[in-house]
Length: 143
Image (cartoon, rainbow, N blue to C red; front, side):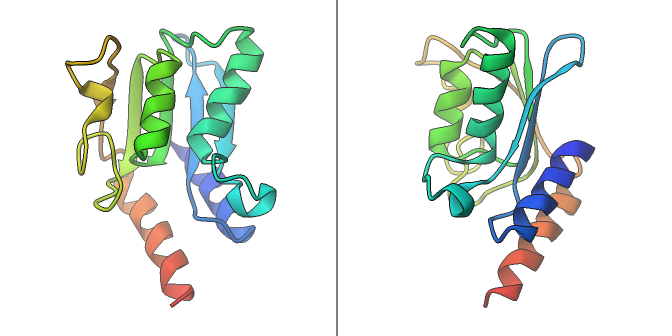
């Protein structure tokens, strides 16, 4: 989570919502990391999670990231939760809850939906106060 928070700070410095993500394999080796790049790339899908998943899949040489853990500073949205499931990520760890668009337990619980053929274990609240503070500071500065 420490590295994901660093990436979130980088995103904020670049004018994007401060979200960072790191994907590790079962041994803890970092396969991919990302930060929000929507403003930089003008790509609506360039969320931190998607960036990290793309980089990890490229590093692994496979879209299948079973056995891996995605650690992200903010609860994933529906798009990112869907990407986690499509990549077969085994565990999702996040810091701050997203009470407006979260899809891992707050608004929706897509990643643990029993109707779907793939699910992920979810661990919440890891350094959540720090992640929430970054988001609050970012949005307060823009109001």
